[in-house]
Length: 83
Image (tube, rainbow, N blue to C red):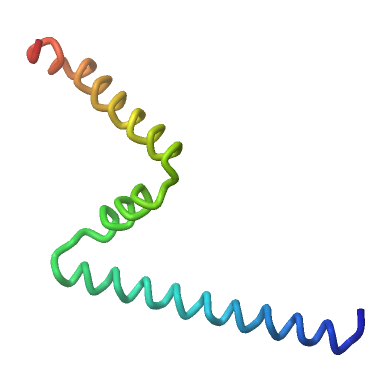
């Protein structure tokens, strides 16, 4: 490990961090653009996050959502009326 090696590694990491900052800014701008077209930012972020899940995690998420709806219907008495 030399000073030159460390310097090169640090510069490479700094470049990657700069690229990540630029990507974050581009994402924020794209979300703002979608919001100005009438989309809800929070819902859009949530939908994209769910869409990007791997199949196992997506299946768990989907099941949890089904359970949530079922429990809420039961708690609010809507489930009995639907049956």
